[in-house]
Image 1 (cartoon, rainbow, N blue to C red):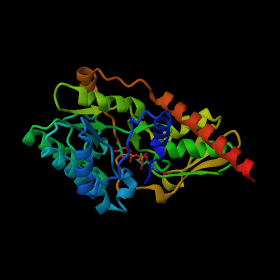
Image 2 (cartoon, rainbow, N blue to C red):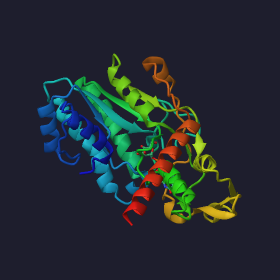
Image 3 (cartoon, rainbow, N blue to C red):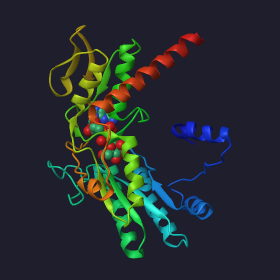
Image 4 (cartoon, rainbow, N blue to C red):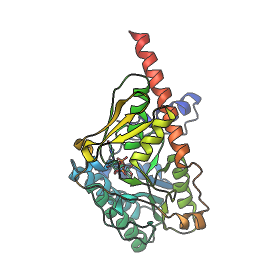
Length: 316
Ligand code: GDD
């Protein structure tokens, strides 16, 4: 089981013997385990963040993605429907549901036009959450979250891939960073701010759906340039499309290359969220901006790489 990202939390609690955290085995593809956990824990609130969450990978494993991301939500909702305890349910819906439906700012009434198996499965789960809310009077809510990042981000998502690779290049452990579509635009926020929004959504008086975003959009190219700058690289772009390269003008070395492998069969080109409803009704405001987010991630990865490198040389 993969629980690397909560390990520190778990050990801290375990060592202090406060017994605040108990971990259960469950699987989004297995109704009986979900039912058993719900009956045993009698939860006040459930936050469903479980997913095969990589959009590119969803083209390679579409059936599995639809099962855990889409049907998995029905498995939880249906277990809650017949349960005596009134559990509040938060569904991690995604801006990927908008797909390429709009080149304008997106809010709670923007139509969905998903562009990936992942986006389709998330749209299905979104609608099922609404159906269960209305049909069975359940406190079931969707947070439509735009991209949210942190040093804990998986290494195959673009922001983390950039910060980790550039830190490795800086320390001489890697030569180049290989990327796909540099012109995709995303509304990137800080995961910690977004987790607060999730909690606020379930503390609201009524069950509802909210867009959570920073209201700013930037290209992948811009993210890479700014991350590079923080590490004293100065990127100059040469060429176009799959021939485009990022050259560090200080050394003349190519440190970024575009390769077809990282292009998706269909990509979402433009995401920009309008979270004014969350601001007004939940009093939610993002605290960390785009530049600060990049700085947090670059600094964390520089430290990570230094530590790993130090441990490696120590073992050799
Ligand atoms: N992963 C990745 N790797 N993406 C790349 C690369 C690369 O080498 N090069 C360019 N990109 C582009 C992708 O094509 C996409 O347009 C953009 O960078 C962002 O990709 P990801 O970081 O993989 O995130 P995402 O936007 O597809 O999805 C994330 O955000 C969603 C919310 O909108 C995921 O966290 C989803 O689970 C989440 O729902």
